[in-house]
Length: 233
Image (cartoon, rainbow, N blue to C red):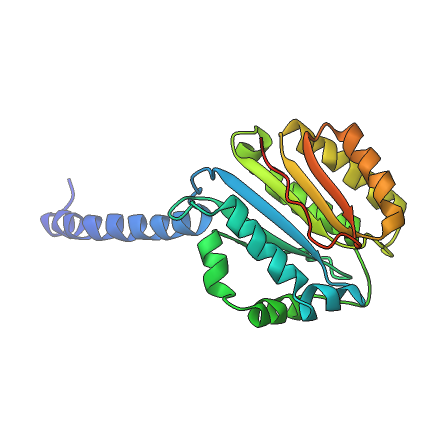
């Protein structure tokens, strides 16, 4: 038998111990668990070349901002309040391709002007090199890691704005990786557009698209004045 005073002491401290233990466990759980987002109806990925002189075309001349606005208008015109997402990636010497993942409204609110969008892109880029194919692959793999995209439940569109002049390590191997990823996009029933390519690179990538299984795609050179946006249907 415990002395009466010891029993009383244990009764008094037990709730406190339990409360402290529960609080500590909750804190750890909050740090480890991330709340999953609801599946989006549509995800658009835009990969922008910011390497070398091509960065001027995309930023100073405003091509990247103009293209992004066109995409938002075409694919998200009536999507206010939905879970649709826009992913922005950059292609330059840096290994960090992914820059932004949010709703169309969040993108417009964060970058209401072409100047703000330009400054953001340039602040994240390294124009001393062009990691084109691997950067696009990074963006594709990130999007396909969403199970709803990989299964085809969420529609996905990928757009790459680049001359496709890749001077990264082993560019041919990187090019084959990208061609393989196009096949993954074909299996997920995605639409794809490659724009502003150097003219002589267009035939090879059009052939890669024909072999990929992607049903709706566009591949246009830098001479095209007004890029064509593919449709899901």
